[in-house]
Length: 142
Image 1 (spheres, rainbow, N blue to C red):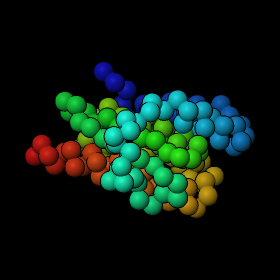
Image 2: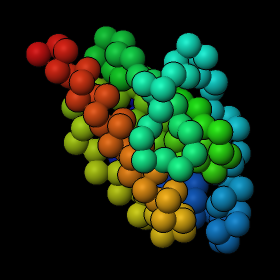
Image 3: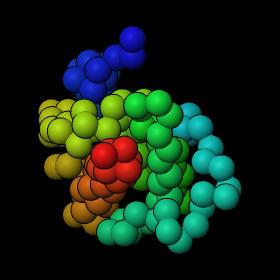
């Protein structure tokens, strides 16, 4: 069985504790962004752009059996790293778990406080959009 959202969050918390300086954490975020699987070009549409992000972020979701999978891309390296983190936590999880997820790891690794206000707003928008997609997939089956 796949790791739970909480297990994945703890994994990221442990990972970020390894880096004492925030510059190293930013570098790690950039590396995570580089490892994000490419989104299919047909999903790079205006409909899939997350509103509220300063840079452009495309997010697509699909439901396979009872799990939601996400793919994304961004035109900014840090933002791409942030969406890669979010996908790592929420990918291939049941929609009800995604909707209920508290995502405390964001505060625990200090991400929000080390982002510019516009990037922090973008992060909130990413979380809202991912939960919205999960809710939409959940509603389709009801």
